[in-house]
Length: 450
Image (cartoon, rainbow, N blue to C red; front, side, top):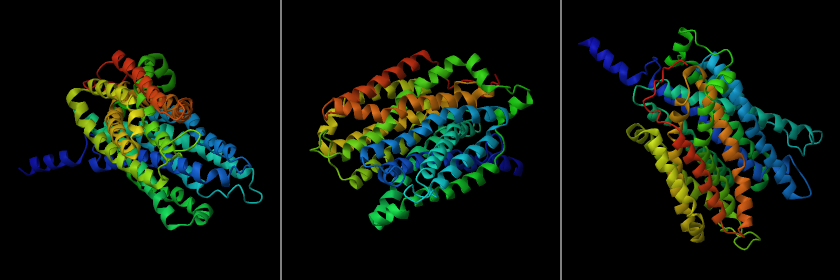
């Protein structure tokens, strides 16, 4: 009697590996939360602060371009990080590699908040150079973070619940976005412009140290995942995971990249482009909506709430209907959604809010299943490397260039966003092709070693 009671209790609190469920959830969630928190903190600072403090120039446009160029350094570093951390994740294990990626990413983020301004005498050259190096380090850490977090969640998941557990690291995107924007809204409301420029901008970077400390504590206490332990026990550890995945899993590597393409494009259009267009002057050379920045940030935060809710909803849907069927339906909806950009934006603030709600709902439904879909494409002994490369190469094709292409298309359209919507629909077509060429992965043996 007592033995059965203990067994029942254990199944509700522990995973097949013996890790507590709450610890797996927190450990997989904390890193991706820092990842997206960092993105928005840096992106906002790149607009508001860095052009003045680190890239002072007589032409503000040149200073802003220099600031965004450094922002893009992380996208170049991410594929490098996916190879480096993927190598150790597939050879040493998920647990130790996740501790390393979080340390690299977290320390770099905190140190950015400590750099003397480039306007400080003697730091005119050193300060921007250090910023570039630290931004590259952030990209390295980020390159290995998502894949490890997804594997931590899915390789600890009970049978038939991988897609549900795979949504845990995906929740880091809406959480990081909301926290980062709330921090800037709060700082903007309590500090003068002078105080914010002098020291206030450092607070969001330094505050990430708390998340890093919590994440390290949780991850250090974890037990290695059962899937990787089986690789070790059977002597199937790949000597060179990169070479192995390229030679034996090149097809899923390509498919995974394009399966993720529309998701990344939608995400960066819904966050960076909508903010640019929504706050641009309505009577400018390239007309926007002319909405006040703080008001539009609140509109974005409201939309991201739907992102978080439907990320959670996507897990059970992917288990019930299958990953491929769900993503085919959602990607088709994204294709159609692209054609609504111009009419919804033309309706002003109300239409923009509707666009944000619909777009972020689709974002949750497409991003949520990816925590299971990409890792399921690869055997265990190259799963970290394979899923990391697909995810991060897609970030270059679908994310790094999306804001620049969108702004160019907006200007080309003379202030209309119909070309931007067409761009999103085109990316959705490429993802649909990849999905049609792929197979359902719901029933795949996740313990398959190689």
